[in-house]
Length: 452
Ligand SMILES: Nc1ncnc2c1ncn2[C@@H]1O[C@H](COP(=O)(O)OP(=O)(O)OP(=O)(O)O)[C@@H](O)[C@H]1O
Image 1 (cartoon, rainbow, N blue to C red):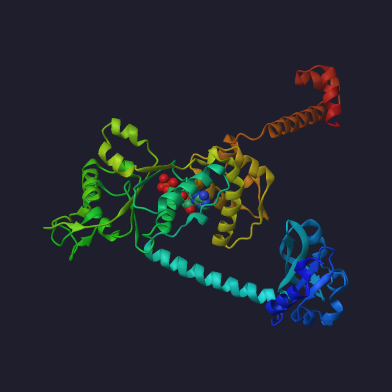
Image 2: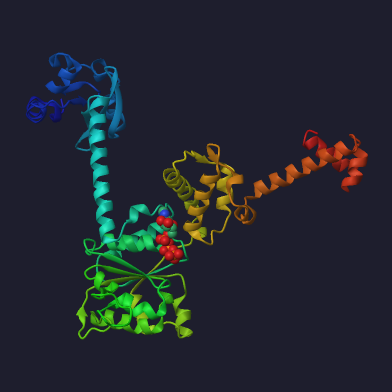
């Protein structure tokens, strides 16, 4: 007998598994039981002395332990029907000196009630955790993390990896990508993965602030700084983001005079509120985003080169949706579930024809446009699935549907036209061919092909 199953080892197994309600069994390389703990014997309602030395299939209903000793493949959390219910078991092959000598089986949950309880406990905990996470994130301002960025494209996986690598540390990051590609989601993720995640994430949409208000928005002002200034003054975005992250969205739209001030604030770590007599020290990390080519703006003298180098320490390019068509189905399904939740409707699926049209479209508005398309389709759909008629006509007409579909469309139109013409000529094929401008033989061939 191999040493693993000798008397001495069985004593060790007994010390390990003897005094527990959990179920353990060990079989040798032929699937014969060498050890079964009392917990398992109690569950099976048998005398364990009688089990040892018997083939596992004679003792444990639907066991696969004898298969594991043949395949050497571990089976984790496998469902096994036993005693009128499903239990969940792990089966682990045992190796000695490179040889498969047996297997260890353990029951994780003895019946569905046990794992349902466990499952609902876990679910409840996860929901609670999620609600805390949301509340916390809403407080800090960064709601999204990398797992909210839905994608299985290799290009996006690379982007996610870069974000993970650059999140820690204080270097400035410039997110580049077309509108709607998810730059803001990545900015949130960078913050949430950084050491600054306990502090605030403050977004500044540079395109939305009127030029004359820029400084007041970014650096704040003191009471009486200008006519119309609020009583008590106002904190600027820089001060609000102290210790956290300042997200400068659409940075290409920032006016030049504000660029000078921002650069100073970043270089010196100091800001001066409008009307203030002294400066304040701030510690912010800047994440900027743009959908404009900043290099061109520099040439046109609309963007300062020194600021460009200051914010562009690490540059991350987010690919447009048309460069990752493999994401379209995944995102469309995700957006459908989201839209169902928001609207309270229960649209189950998206027809294959719709998927093909979506995949053939260029998506200039990227994921935002896809999201809007699915949302409006959900509103319009009356059946269970989103159909082609629920998709806006400009998307249908500019989608480059696949070649076979085009062929199919042409054939359908050809068949319908021949049928209609034959209807008008009361079945006279010669006359129909003449009206259609094709030869008689060609018409006969087509009629045969379409079964007319
Ligand atoms: N990979 C993704 N998974 C899920 N939702 C996404 C993804 N990418 C973008 N979205 C969604 O698409 C919309 C646009 O994303 P976001 O605002 O981050 O884009 P953006 O690049 O910052 O756009 P803009 O340049 O116009 O500000 C949002 O509703 C966002 O939740």
